[in-house]
Image (cartoon, rainbow, N blue to C red):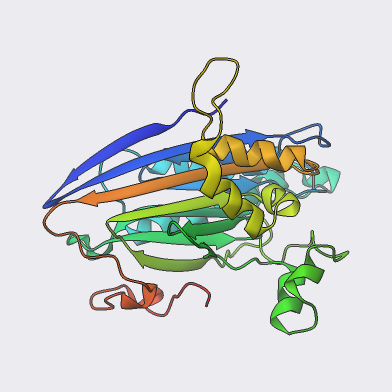
Length: 298
């Protein structure tokens, strides 16, 4: 069962409102749910313990625990704090491998998320998206589902090289091989994007258990028709979009653990800019150098 939660940040000249819900299921095949998540403004994160490795559930929980300990309250965070926490989470997951080294075991997890940040601490509000592995971040503008993150996977590299199509990648024998993960090395290399905060935005975060079963077109269809669907039979409450997407993935086969977070944000106030059609409107003045060249995938 998933319940929608609302939070509000009263900021200088603007009010930031958040509506979000999360849901996770072990699926129809796996005995253990190795996914973990954090869903509480200003940070939303999904971690998928690496399949086929020992203690994947511990790895994902450990990564999420690092974020839960670092963030909270009713104010935006800073980009540097997010990057520091990603590094800390990697160190903590690596420590799990050290603990089990005598068994030859390896712990690892993907990590994907968004954080509501104030760039430069001067009311320059953005959504900071970050990713390590093949969990995904999508944005939804009311008509189009757009994949923000880039999969760190063997098949994505083949797609980028033009050797296979995206459709072929869905059934490729190496589709489960990730090329980046927490716990894989002492240094972690996350992709990072800064997206200007707009009057209204919607993001969808998910583990690959969703995208293994549902294509982007089907995900978009479920989003479009979500509000018209029936309420939950057990208690009469509305079914959240996150729960509906997870249930659809399980019904379609549920070959892996499935986790979804849906986040809607609204900025209300005199300083809110008019939504643009492209993230390229990002004002680069005053951005930290390590974020200046980041862009969503085209």
